[in-house]
Length: 242
Image (cartoon, rainbow, N blue to C red; front, side, top):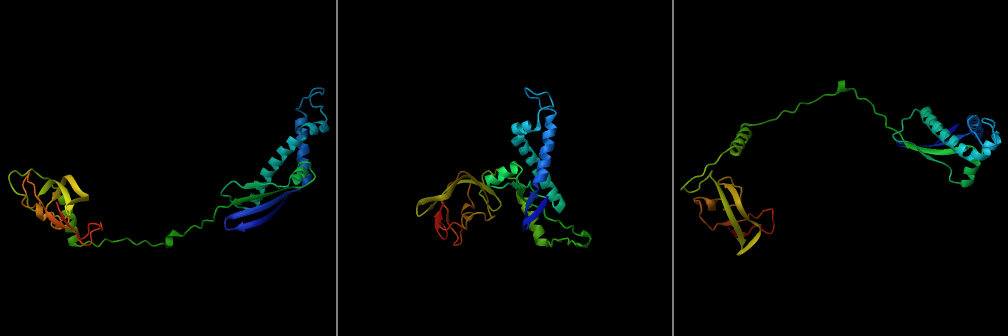
């Protein structure tokens, strides 16, 4: 067997493998004698069928078996000899010329085929004893801690219904509203059952101030202005009523 490397590009490999026609012929003859003792044909006693007659009947299919087995064996041997580890099953390409194929099947030409595959990359082990780890240290000041505590307090705050008094900072009010600009409702400017905690600044300037002093069931008109840098450009800097 002759093995020639025709491509070595990164992890890609391509080899050309040639197996002598004499070796193929010897394998074929051995296969013929294997079946000779088992084949039983009309007009012949078992094991007494002439080899030439068997070759005429089964030669082509037997040669196909021999070639397939030879290709499998030789491709594995070629890779093992190179001590490479294919990442995938190698792709086998036989000659495209039909006349060349016929010569191989008839034993008149050497068996040649190309095999292409990718190899697994070499992984070099790192000496972890030389690695150093830095433990990150969080620099948290008193203000950050205080802010975090306040957020937890706000999240866990419970509210009770306040009867008969006006809303003030720290109270949560539940409102329905419709916003208008130049007397026309605008997209995203309406809501129902919206909870607002006064003094937290969760809405545009002027909106929460307009709710201070409101009582349950009261209706109000509130004037507010969208900031100039408001994310929705169509509303930025606009005066609105709610």
